[in-house]
Image (cartoon, rainbow, N blue to C red; front, side, top):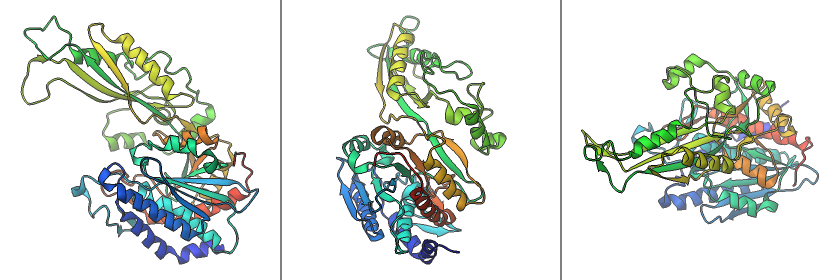
Length: 463
């Protein structure tokens, strides 16, 4: 028997698609100051849609940067309170010439919607709103209390978010965070995310002289900034990729047999993967599998290095200055500020005495996050995803970073589960970004089931 909310979703498929396309037409590029008005317009559009869906309180809250949209419907005392998180800003669309259709003129082709923000994450923003509207259309109250917090700065590193959440703890208090920024894979290969790595980064500047020097006149006497920088970087890892910075691994949580089994359960085809990214072989700690290194072990990578002459031909100089940027992906229970300080101490320790070294922290530090694997919110999510899929989902850890999960855990004491429309490999941040319509419709239903399941789930929180 079809649930009333499911019939409502089916009846409104065309309307919901048109609303999605309308939302995508707003070029809410947060990194471009010229588009600040469009970012705000996207927030105002979402606020209006939340009011239409039946939220009792909807506000646009200022942050000092791009605004936050907040909404709530809190009418079921004794039931859990769920905070839905998402973002309405998008990446720049460049290079425009690589788009088959204009990035802010959404096109529907072959069961897909192509536009900037289609996958990341304007489609997913709408799904929990549609789900609440469909549940309320039955005449009953929502099975849970809901709050929405949509930000406009995620694509620029959420600079205002830590302070905003810290200053609005009471407003945002909840039993569970439901992050719509992500996905659960396709219908035939579902997956739920249970963790993300953290992040810290540094820029190193090495100065060896007051000016670039003639390599004939000063060669053999003067230090070379690039050689000194290479020495520092080379000292950080051994030949197989183990990180040599003292204390780097001290807080790393060992992988249990269950951890290893769950990581191994995620489909992975080594040879196909190597071909797809053009590498000859994998690299890293040999005592761990490539999958384990990718999602559950910390990293230290050189992201960029520059210095000296880089033009055509030869310029025989000894460069006075060299630079590098490095970032580290972190795992539980590493803290970015602790790892940063250990790195700085090590860099100064191994730097040649003949050069000056300056180390500058990079923005975007984030705590790692791992959802407790017996958490009732995770079990409810798995039930909902199973109901709209051909098989139960596997549990996956993301190798990347979602800073807000650690912020919610630290400031609100709330754990985060992720449910969104992305099926992966949809060109997010790239030309011809798209989302599959099958998932757009399917995950609306998953949200309804998840809200119903959470309404019957005891959750321990602060709301």
